[in-house]
Length: 298
Ligand code: ZN
Image (cartoon, rainbow, N blue to C red; front, side):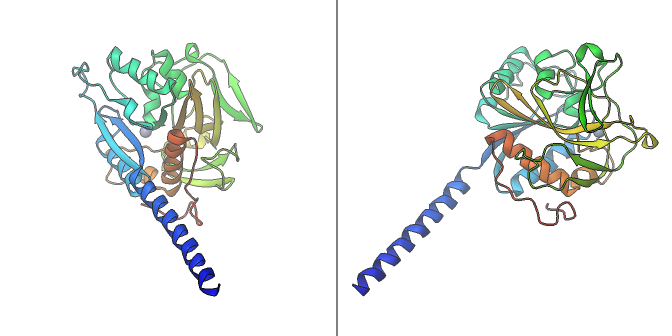
């Protein structure tokens, strides 16, 4: 009997190990498929998309492809990313209109449940594309105004939708600022501290848009002494469009300077990776680093 029990125990252990092994193999074999779409931007997309790609790849969770559009003024007719092959599309794009076929394919992808990550100046793009503006929730520049939707910000702890006429989009100086959680339950930010300091970035302000089915996750106070709006501005948010999940991060300014602190900050990396996983799968399996946001996880 003793021997039998022993074998039985070993057998259970063996099964457990096999299960774990299989789980690991499955995890390793099936990374989340992500497409970074770039190729035109008023920002330094040549560097930013590589930085984003490295974060995603190094996390071990994602398999990343990159779609680079023709340059400004180029022929867009052959630019046809196969969105349907991916679980999330990261938009690092602010430039010429895509072809009608690509626009339709993108909307079809989102409508059917495809994930989207709207990164920084991607919310400057496509002012006249109604559905795109619904997908990003809030946008700026490109002569956006009250016809694009309300200003959205926080005042006295409550979300405000302000239809005052005026242009949409702006920012003050590059500076450190405090991000404040406005939703503690959403998987992307669950477990993050109530407030933390984000480093050397633009703080987008006076953004406006349809803001339908949009949940603001974090805001930052845009100080007038830094050229800001004097408002608590939304910077991290999620939007539902069709069956698609969208994570919109206004953080992450990358310009021509040799260093890019706004995207090297741990909080950018952590929220970007968590937001991408959530957009792709509806879940977040990543743990918040114990010393968030004081350590860099490159
Ligand atoms: Zn910028």
